[in-house]
Length: 306
Image 1: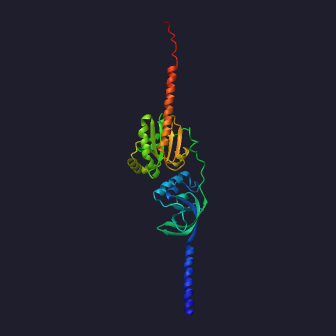
Image 2 (image 1 turned 90 degrees about the horizontal axis):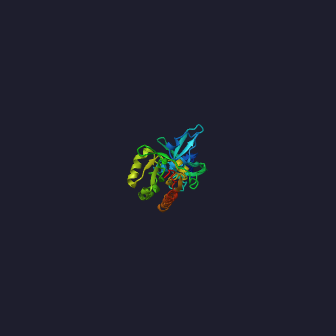
Image 3 (image 1 turned 60 degrees about the vertical axis):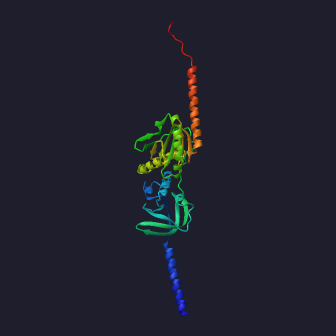
């Protein structure tokens, strides 16, 4: 009996030690979920908060590239410790952490470190705050405003949207990592073929930067693009044109350089053609009316004596 009691006490002691160890390994951290250390390091986070619309747009690319999503924990002195997020008991709503990027959260779970890389396995997550943005122009509010965009082409030459005044421009924002963008490229190429002789020009504004030029060139080759491609477009560019920050997005711009349509998401070829056909028909009508006025205008009587 005595042996049984001793054994039971030893088991209880061992269980208590394990339970205490587990409790010690459980931590609660408060910080901001970010897409990568490079994006965090683009600014002094003591003065410039992370989580702008441009940051969130970049997060889409980072996540698509397989970059680990991080919890940035900043101390009172401004030093930041990053923890790679791992799924524990907490069940995120999507297949990745993208929905939480930019948000300030409190997480509870266990941590581990390997070769100076910290990880946190999340058992509980509570959102404390979400990034706030100024109101963006809507698709309708930009109609009739002048559109200007300055980017570089594949050869590093600066190109301006205003250089295409006199033509109808279809400006499409895309990126090599954007799957929906790839799907709409054949339709845009077909529109370029069909309407080029009528004074319509399709232009691709890629969100990829100069470091991704090989990917851009490969994308062009694979999708057989037949229109100019500029690089370095940003979420800010898209937002001021009423397109939001999510790719793809398309503008239809008149010959006078003013926006006729701002289309979020993948284009519908039939709807885009309606815009172009209407603009071309209107231009033809105006041209005929001007010609008719010239023909009807009486000639001035000669003042030279006969």
